[in-house]
Length: 625
Image (cartoon, rainbow, N blue to C red; front, side, top):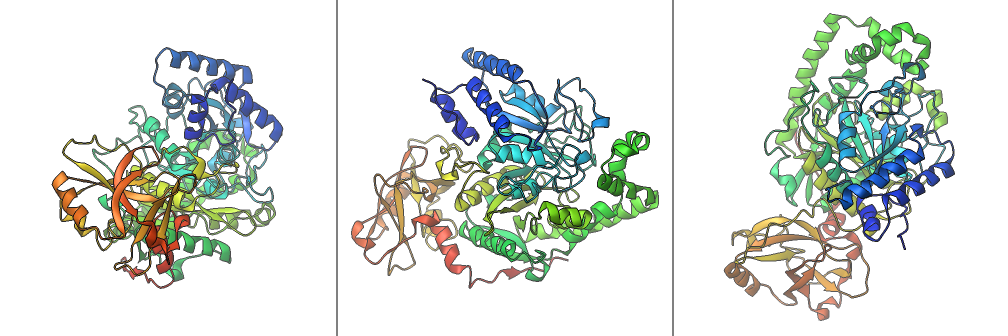
């Protein structure tokens, strides 16, 4: 008997369904049924025939049975309709522009070679010009949580298809925030890679020098899995860049202690949305709980860079991408799109060079922030708008949505949008982690920790993040265990940056990484301990979030000396991790729980400490000049 198709098609849950007996053919049938049930929701511009996709799914089964390795086996995905898919027209949301591509875009080709199944092409703001998702003759998709609200754009259909459980992931594009704004409005992860990391061959350009192919997923682990398939240098793409050897964010992001930048309070803008401001403040608290120290930065150079995008020559670059067509078919353009692109006619070559000079000045000023922090934490958008609000002020409100996104590609940053929770009306908003170029992998690891600390549902599906099988980004494979070493899991005062961490580092212990326990552990803040310590207790049958621990490797001699220093009521026993491995780690005598406070719901000691310090810690102010 075959397994049922889960509501969430995240890669880990889908793989578990396949392991239990489901097949890609069954999944394709279920997805097309879901699409029919939703009716005309303006998500799709074109779909492949169901029979064609079913035949491809059956061929995948045969390929896998033949021993072929397919890392994205049977994962359905959608493609924004400014990227080519052979056999489907590319319209860029402009029917008169439509053409029949001879081949898949390079990123699509790589995904299909890895076993992913493309279902069709999704709606977008015409020619990827907009952050709202309503500038399309194919209709306007809506936020999956409330049809009164916009989906965000320009990658509107791709975000909604992912959040609605119609695909495992979707491709979008991102020039000014199009891969991040719709993620925020639909409770998704939106990975905006470093420019050139993913090939843009087969993409209808918006601003060719800035365009990135982006990815919408339900989890950071999924984004990391897709990144491993599509991140590749493409000699045929003049804007492709090979990642430097060993490229990553500063080493601090691989540890539990790091510094993250936040704008000065007077520089934060939410346009009157107090709940959005509250969700951002909660995100800062959550990041503290992960071991981050907030550092106030001067946001001015970022804001001024953002203003260049539509006030400078990059508007002319949008016209350059479609110039012959726009001149011959002006009536085919959406009115708002035509108005924006039409601004290019007032720009001269002198204006262009002046803007380039100004950008270099701002880049120099903005780059100074990386001497003070390893990552930025910003709102993805200041707020969200209804369809009615946007119709009344289409240009102004679109501009507001780019407050924290427009500067990213101009400054050559990588970015990862992650969910940040919901307003009281049930509409989601997000935050974005940003780092220097090629810090993508580090951002995905940190984003996974942040997302897990938040918890909640995956997109608009009914499945919770805590129910996803344990394939977390931060739980990378531990190096092979040396016969002369011992792995130790620490949960409290011995974590990186905590008061007793020196008891590990002074013994040359090797930090391995951040992991999570199995679900049947509880955590308590013990009473009367100095320094403050938690107690970890296993309770068979309990189903919790799993608790964050760090793994350290010690020599047998160092482990013995360390263990001798462990005071009652703590002891070293055996812990079971979320992936089933057993390691040595801290446990607590049950008698110590008298007077203790249970803190399991926080997901770890750092998260609990962050909740205590949120109201009394003042970020360090660093002037950025």
